[in-house]
Image (tube, rainbow, N blue to C red; front, side):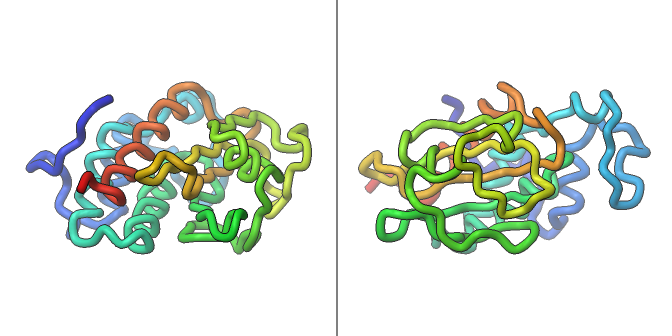
Length: 200
């Protein structure tokens, strides 16, 4: 596991998320973001964020506060700006044995998800990443946004190892997420865990 540190190579926060997103998308074609339409060209679909840079930037964003709300809010904004063809990025937090909506980017979402229900609830119950190429084929899928067609959910662990929340990302495309996204997002969540729950 890589150990990401805040360093001079990180973009200064005053540069803002749009500038950060531009660097993360460094290899995208110049016309890839015309208007708000969804881009379906293979060149764009094969592009993935620089997850190492995202992890480094997440450390910088968490530097001013380790309170979960601002850290998770900035993390969701960072991912939403950096990832292509996603329509929802956010967090659900474990409260009373269920998942409660936390900071997010995108349309209004389901407020509470029971353990074991849908993609998020399954990730919580099984403590396992859920990479779903077609959410409509997933048993018990909860359609918070009917436009979503694929999804990835990564569990977040507290200091004792228990699941304390999940990172949830949806896309309007089928089969949007791959093994590279899974590995990158798992690493990003491990950075989140270290920032939110530093060793005593």
